[in-house]
Length: 134
Image (cartoon, rainbow, N blue to C red):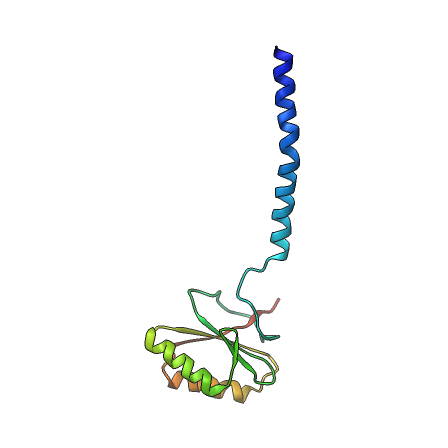
């Protein structure tokens, strides 16, 4: 009787082992393939910085590529549409934070003008997204 019990336990271990292997491989696959973070709509290469802070809280992200094309919430917008959308968001929540992810090759005057416009319509917290220089 003792021998039969040991073989039955051993058979149970052998049938569970392939399932554990498959689950582990699926876990590794999704860790490698999955992305953590917001989806990027444009190919934007932000400027480098030596100092910086990590992102905190929920913020609305505006992406601008080097040619000046802007994306807000996954759709392309021009300056007027951006101002209207941000104004609506500010009416709903005056503490709305805006993250501006601009390409390093974007004309600085265009970026400064956009930042000033956002400040004028009432954006209290405006963050320029950069990459940490190593």
